[in-house]
Image 1 (tube, one colour):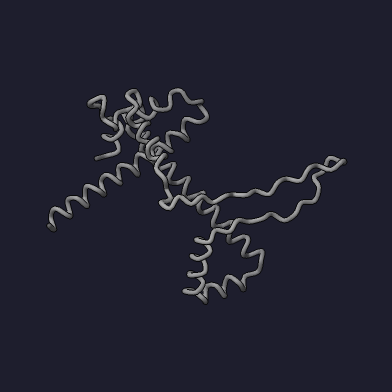
Image 2: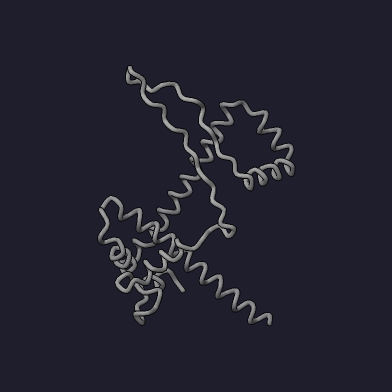
Length: 180
């Protein structure tokens, strides 16, 4: 099933994949968001440092250093990686603080660039097809102008993942039928 056919399918009103007039595609997005991502349903509490109240002069009072969360599962993964890669761990420990900080920032910049490229690719694919563009415009018609493009990109990524998942399941089913 292609992304285009997924978004423009209009069949029986009870079909879960119909466009938003029948609640289908938007309902599909809502259902995917309601599914729990973590099967063991552990909740990790995020704590933010509280900002210090301003002093009498109006400047912020000196603050304590921020507190960081610890996640035992993540810590275990890090420890396992360190144990498997001692040379890399020694390399990281030998890095000057400035270089280490810049490396962390570089990783963040790369991640933001990757997200931007994906977003631009999704929007380019949508804009190439007028029928698909109309379908997305219909989905976001009631949103403020400054939010429409971002939401279209988000829905496009979600739809692309859903189509890929369906295609992957169909290929697995065909593969099982051939090998059986």
